[in-house]
Every structure is written in structure tokens, then in C-alpha cells.
Length: 142
Image 1 (cartoon, helix red, strand yellow):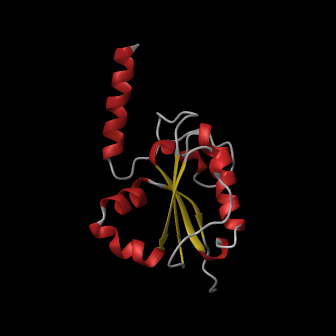
Image 2 (cartoon, helix red, strand yellow):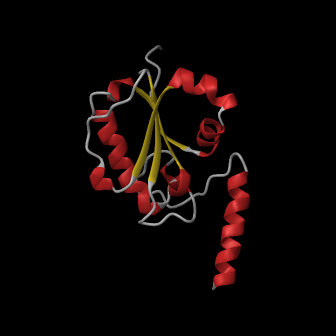
């Protein structure tokens, strides 16, 4: 059993060093890209995204990206949820209470600055390339 677990960790390490590897799970929510989030976290991620979008800063949000363990085989009910919120804001201060969802690492960035800094910032680049975009604001132009 231990040897089998070591093999899974080795396999996960190989997949996670590849830029565009996303695991595919059963999509319990029915929305785009939720199949790339571990089923244990799909409902929580969905509820968190809805709360953020309904919050007073929601109108400024352009993208919501989930990354980290919630997108891997080794996610569990004890895993945290890592979320990046991009938008047209200089500072991100949501007013919703997210404590009921467990440990959440929530990062808010101005989208233009995030994209321009991505080339020189490994954290930004990895989250953008390996993360799962669960919300993208549609353009208001026709």
C-alpha cells in the first residue's frame, strides 16, 4: 500500500510539473471547468464563487481561478482552497464571511497588473497556467 501511494505521489509530481495538466473528475456542479476541481471541493468552490460575485466587490471581478491541491488527486476534505480573484480594482476587500468553508487562501489582484507581471512572477504564471478558471466576465461590447 505504501509503495502504491509513493507511485501516486511520483505520478502527481510528474503531472504537476507539466504546464497544462488538469485532472478530470466527475462534474457534480454542471458548470464549465468544475470537472477539473476535486469532487470533495466542487460544491464549496461553487458557493464561495457565488458569494464573492454577490458581494459589493463582485461587479469588479473579471476572473476567479482555483489552483493548488483542490485541483489534484491528493485533495481531501482537510485540504485548503486556493483562489485568485482578478478584477478592475486596486485593492480587494470582500465583505462576505467565508469562515464556514474551512481554510481558504484568497488572493485578489488587479487583472492588468497580474497579467503584466506574470512573466516575471512564478506564482502568477503557475496559478494562471495550472489553475482552473471557474468564472470569466463576458465583454460588454457586441
